[in-house]
Image 1 (cartoon, helix red, strand yellow):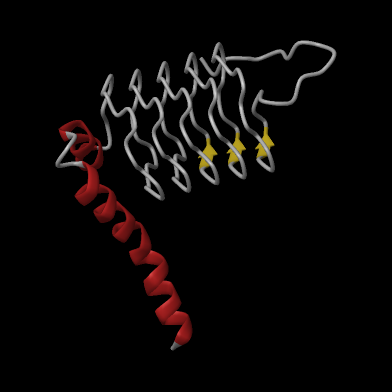
Image 2 (spheres, rainbow, N blue to C red):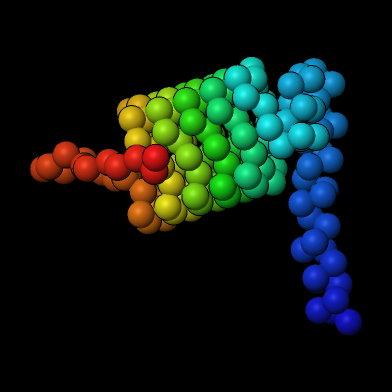
Length: 155
């Protein structure tokens, strides 16, 4: 019985977070409502939005302005953020796996405690990142060193 209850709560949690995000932000920002309904919002202005805990799996945010956005605890698996502006965004404890961040502005992003695996950061700007306690695998993000990283593109 407990296992069934746990399974039901696990499945319902993403729906709860999506509805909270939608109710708090979409009235003020119709582009956010577009993102949540269609899973795509290319070149949208989502600066400063609160997407804490949002399930953004596979979303298309190419060229979007997410400057200063709160994406902490968000699931961005498979998202396309090519050319997006994420300057000073909060992605603490976010799940950033198989994400395309090609040519994105990641300056000042807080990736603390985030999971960043198999993501493309080709030609991304990455000054002043916070990667404290982040799990980074197969992604060209790291702490400086002797030689330059060879960052390859997915394309």
